[in-house]
Each structure stands twice: as C-alpha cells, then as structure tokens.
Length: 252
Length: 223
Image 1: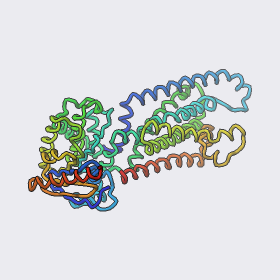
Image 2 (image 1 turned 120 degrees about the vertical axis):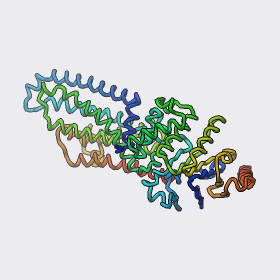
Image 3 (image 1 turned 60 degrees about the vertical axis):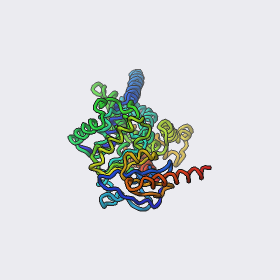
C-alpha cells in the first residue's frame, strides 16, 4: 500500500527525531502537573460547591474542560514547532524537487504534510484527554460537554497546524516559520483581550479571536459559526501554502 | 532564463549538457524532470507531453538534482524506501530495487547508516541510487561530479557509462573533460540558448572551439 507517501514520510521523520519525543514528553508532563493542581483546587473547593448546588459546576467544568483548554494554549507553541520543518525544512534539504519529480501536486504535498502534523498533534491531544478521563470511573463526567471540548480542541489544533504549514511554505528557515506561526497564533489568541478586559464588544475583532470560538466548545456548545471559523482557519492557510508551492514550481 | 532550447536524446545515448555557470543547465534539467513547469514549449517523452502526462512520465524519469536531496535523519535504506514509496512502488518491488541499487552503487555496507552522516561521494551515490530505484528510461543528472575527488569521479564515470546501455542519460556539467569522458553527444547552452549540438565523435575540435568562444565571450563581458 502506497497511500499518502508524503504523510507517512513526514511521520517517520518526526518519530525518528528526538525533538518530537522530547516535545511530547514535556507537554504531557506539564499537562499532568497542571491537572494535579486543578484537581487539588477542585477537591479543596468541594465544600463551597456543595453549598452552592445551583451553580451546577462539576468535574468536567472545573477540571476536564480547562485541562483541554490548557492543551490548546500549549498548542500555540507546539503546532509551530511541529510544523516548522514541513516545507521550509524540505527546501533547506533540497528535497522539494524529489517530491515534484515524483509527480505530486503542490496541493497534495501541503495536504499530506498537514495530515502528518495533525496525526502527531491529535495523538498528543488524545493522550492529554486520557489524563482527566483516568478519573472518569470515580466521578460523573458530563460526556456531552467533554466530547464538545475535545472536538473544539481538535479543530483549534488543526487550525494552528494549518497556520504553521502555511508559514513553513512562505518562509525559508524553519525557525523563522515557527516564529511567524507563533506570532500569528498569539495575535489570534489576544485579539479580543481588550474587549474581555473592558467587557465591551469589539465586533469583527472579537469574531477573529480564537477564544471567542473555543470557549463555547469548552462549555459544551457546538455552534456552526465556531465550526465554520475553524474550518476557514484550516482551509485558507493550506490553500495559501499550496499556491506558494505551486508558484515555486513555476518560478523555480 | 531558458529560450528556444530544442534537443533530443535517444535510448542508449549519453547527452552532455555543457555550459558555464548560469547558462540554464539546471533549469533545463528541472523542466525535463517535471520539477519546473515551462512557460512555453514542451518536454516530450516517448511522444507524450511531459506536463500533460506527469503521472505516466514520472515513472520513466530518474532525477538527481545538483544538491543531493536527502532526509538526513533517515538511514540509507529508509531513505531509499521513502523514495520508492514516492514512486508508488509496492513493498516487494521496493525491497528488490533497494537491494539492487545498494549493491550496484556499493552502498550495501552502509544501508543502516544515517544518510546525513555519509561523505559527499557516498551522498552522490545515494542520490544516484534514488534516481535509479524505479529503473527509469531517462536518467537526468545535474552536475553529478560536483565535489567528488578524482577517484570518485572516475568511479562515477564508469558507473554512468555502465548505466547508459538501456536508457537515455542527460548529464549537465561545466567541466569539458567530464563531457569528453562520459558523453556521446554534447549540447552547449549559453545564456539560456543552444549554441552547439553535435556528436562528440564527429568533431572534437569544434566542441573545443565552441566552448572556448563562449568562455571568451563571458570573460569579455566580465571585463
């Protein structure tokens, strides 16, 4: 079977490098530590929660969903680091001609590279999700809310990965690609900071912000507007990356 | 920039694409290999226009760019396996082809070494192995002798001559002696145009004169 040769190649290259393993281990270690802190705070807050049953806050609201949100925040850094080599690295290793000479279209190369980074990041997401799920037998999680939070996290990570791939296509050095992707992700992350602090709505700035669209997922709401936002954030960077690569094929 | 470049190469023939730096050799070869798309004109392979039949053509072309394309974190065998996958070879065919090329290019002893740790000569041989892996009808080699010591150059020449019996080979170089040692026919490119196209056996003096004229031309422009 020779399906997705570029994606398989990228995954292989990712897994033979200690960098990806170290990154994954550090991220999961940090998440586990933060989970324990959240859990500790949750246990300490039990008397207060018992006194205010109308708040209806449980393990999923206070531990599991915030844990996934922390993973999303970590992905602002993880996704650029994982995707920085995707195309900029090929360019530096002079291997792009090899892919073009094999008859692969720029769009296909970009798509397969996106899939490879997604497999790695979603694998990390699943491992991260297993941490709060390890206490599922002892608590009563809101499965609907947890699945919505997981879906939102998966979409957000995919969008960050697509941005990373696009930056890698436009920039010649992997480190520059990572910095550019991190910068874009941070800007998207803090766009609505002003309106959040003042409580005023900032119109389209709010719409563009990541937090506007990830927060409803964390509360268990799957809204089409948020899904469309993330899908746009996946499709647009990938199409820009494919166009950049196609132009490179024409110009050399 | 390449303009009005027309030449053909037949099976069993080794064609040398000669020219000074910046003559358009690499661009021409990249277009022949399907890596670059020409603005105008066409590359024909067995009568098929290459850029309209890329899927078919890619199985017929083996390409070694000027800078050897390597994924340094993969071992020699893993690298060739990945190249075989890119050429849609099935597992059994890949294994056969990898063993064949490792043997042919004297890389068997380093099959499990990281490709990034090979010497320049070994990297060139590995690049040639990936170009030959799918047994192409047309072999396109861009400056294959660059950076090799005299012994490695001699080995490479012998190897290329051995490979040319069953396929067409195009080699680019800016070294006249390389062309004379390896090629049956020479095309000289200068400023993106063909300046000379002849069988090497026919008139060696004409080749020398043409190349010297171009070199003189370039020196005068520089002066």
